[in-house]
Image 1 (cartoon, rainbow, N blue to C red):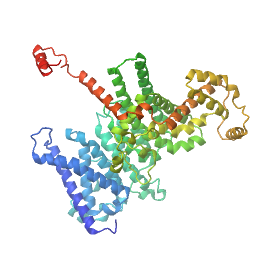
Image 2: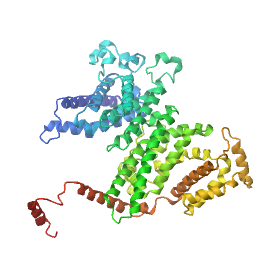
Image 3: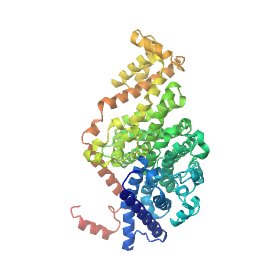
Image 4: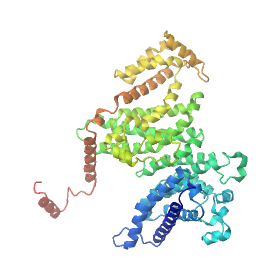
Length: 573
């Protein structure tokens, strides 16, 4: 970019200057109350709304994201371009934190644009007290007279007076997370501030004192891994507080923006944040599956309203899982090796809870179907969560245009192999197998075989109990040397003091391996493979029918005159 054409740079300079002016006009009209939802508002105001939301914000988001991914900010966003970007930053933050009705529909787009900006801007704008150490800041490259000619204030602290400092934002987020506040009370925090902070921290940590201990006093940022640890902990608390809410699309987006900071958090978050959240999700899954089983036992012929409500609960559960599992999978990837070397009781508890949710999912066709519907309707690319992208710090979960063209059939967008529920279990399966004692291998194989023969859990438990005396008495040399090697591993001791505990351990692992094998080799069940689109359409029609019944009872009018009109319109009835 340093050797790029001057015409390109001048065009970019003109575009950003015009974009800053357009955003300032939008903010000015918003303050004057000219944006309404009526049809009689001025034509020019309508054009400003459409241009800002449909054209300008997506263009700025793509531009800043590209600049941030390729680290072009130090070459492009300098001098007068930096001044225009400061103006854009001020307007984006003011719009995103506004309480206007107009902003409510555009808040997520504003948050995405602000996050992309934070990843591209070459100045740590949330830490203005350290700006003197930044060689790219216009306050260090231009004299006071030159800055005055560009209409800049005398002090860098006055450039964006409406944006709080990093420490103040962190204090506000900690307070909100501890108070258990919901999304409806502070939507701008979830949609705008948190994405901006995630991007800002992933951008500036490498320039902080932890990465440059020799010159900590001259760093242009004071960011540390403790900031990331605190931020992710509070994000998990916010997700915990908002599980089950009606409007939760923001949680899925927040899981995407939080990805880059997970590799710097402490393993202690497992006990304090990940386990409580997983416990709550597991209980919710158990409750919904129990309600589903209860309705199945009633054996109604047609789909009742209660069954449709359970489908809605499965949809909400799938949404909540997809808000948490992307963070969980990445956290497990960074800590699994340590948990295998030094067995961790909390990690084993995490495996058990993830395994329980997986078994609920594998036994419920409705659970699987609603997860698939959620992934398809939101165009989620699960592979972006399963493959670590080292080139992009802000890889989006959305499907690209090229991928969308290839996805002609609904089933192409989702497979059980890429389900996050399956992926989370696979990530933690080594932890679960590490729980087993050296003599459990034959018992696990026996129990898994009995599950494949359709035995119940009680029957399999009795078989394990009756064969537990075979534990550790194998004659096969190929297995004997493996057991001897296993016993020599550090921190591993064979616990045979409690036979019932051994029975439950073997039963749990065998149950998980059996259902995982069904997913691997059987693929999607017949209900999903055959007639997938027709069945989904039927479900939607039934939901719409029940929704009509919940509305005003026009089908049972009390007025005789209204009934007469209805009979005229529908003579066959």
